[in-house]
Amino acid sequence: MFKRKSNIFFLYLAMNILLLGLLFAHASLQEKADLLILSEKGKMVEALELTDLCLFTDARYTRHPTMADLHSPFQDYPLSFEHFPSGSLVPVPQTMISNRGKDAIH
Amino acid sequence: MSRIEKQRNIIGFTLSSLLRRKRKNAALIGVYTLIVFMLASIMFFTYSIKKEASFILKDAPEIMVQRLIAGRHDLIPLRYTDTIRQIKGVQSVKGRLWGYYYDPIKGANYTLVVKEDLHNGPGTITIGKGVSRNLPGKEYGTMSFKTHDGNYLFLKIKGTLSSESELISSDLILISEGDFRKLFGVSREYVTDLTLKVRNPKELTTIATKITQLLPDTRPILREEISRTYDAVFDWRGGMIIVLFSGAVLAFIIFSWDKATGLSAEEKREIGILKAIGWETSDVLLLKFWEGTIVSLSSFLIGILLAYLHIFLASSTLFEPVLKGWSVLYPNSKIAPLINAYQVATLFFLTVIPYTVATIVPSWRAATIDPDSVMRA
Image 1: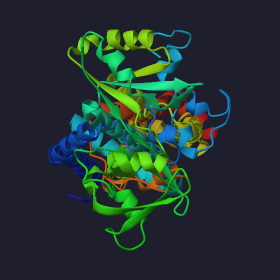
Image 2: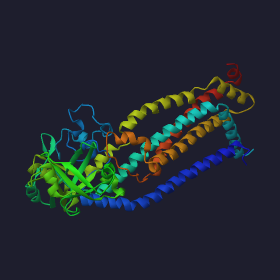
Image 3: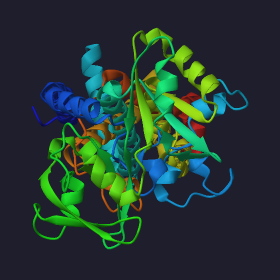
Image 4: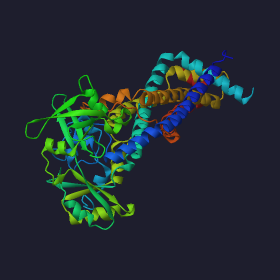
């Protein structure tokens, strides 16, 4: 069977596709297992009235992007460079761009 | 010869042809795999974080009201609750006390949250896993805080928050109201911000507008804005990784375009010989089609598999330096693998199809030329 190169290739392809299928199966099973942990986290958010994920703790506007005041991403002036590496990951929220000039809620 | 048998023969020949130039093709597959790996890693990471954020934060307060002074978030007087309570549709208004504490010894920022009913009382704190990891040695000791007037406040650690909740609680310190006010010198008339419960969720925007009309120095933040913010933050098209990475992607596009479109003299001669010994133009195109498919499909499948292992089983090790930034505390938690077939299909159409198509066009040109002139060239 392995004398022909095409057979080896098809076997290799089948193995890769099988592994891809296993990834989806793993993701699906893990998602079900994680649902309980996610619900626990949700309960903690409700109980402690939290608003943000604890992803970046280097500055207040990266720790709580949703709570930061409107000018926080540009601490010094609107075109200033960022002080923190994670500040480069946090772009200006679309809502700010679309609401520019309007003063509906903010 | 059956059609399947013919395809198998052509695939066999294609593999032999690829193996004849194994170094060049191995380099191509290596770079191609790396590109797919990076793109898939970014896609998996951002999608899972966004999904997790929207799932966890769906129970966040419906409306939060901040006070802004000179464009900055400031403490809000508790008397504002009376004004807000009078707005039709508001079920309840509560003051929230929270703030940041910078520990100069560890160089870490902590988030202090007051939650009296969950907390153990004055003189004690409950800390997140990230905070406890940063403490020397024992978990259940005492932490000292420098108060606003220069004194020291010693608080006993009564417990730690679960490690499963690190994504939201890593840097948290739950503290009593009295200790919080003593630490920061916040008077009893002020809180950090207000949280509202509303009877009818459809009235959220109307209530928010009324708040800004009644209290012009305030800024209401709706719960839906929280998920919008996280969508914007982790939009996979945005962000530094993509910007930096786009250079590498462009380099690969140029490399693969050059490789796929410009046939080498050796490849042209090979096509000429094949035609001279009786291969049809369609057979040559099939050969090139399989060549493109073998290279791109192999790279795609290996890249996807490695990206999954990287993000969901190896805790995004390669992204860690970028994500950590200058943070001293960082959540040590795995992301839930929330992936879907749409993501994989998108990546497939963005990577495999263009390459495969790009290999066929120049081959068609070479395959239609007279074999004699190709071999003489």
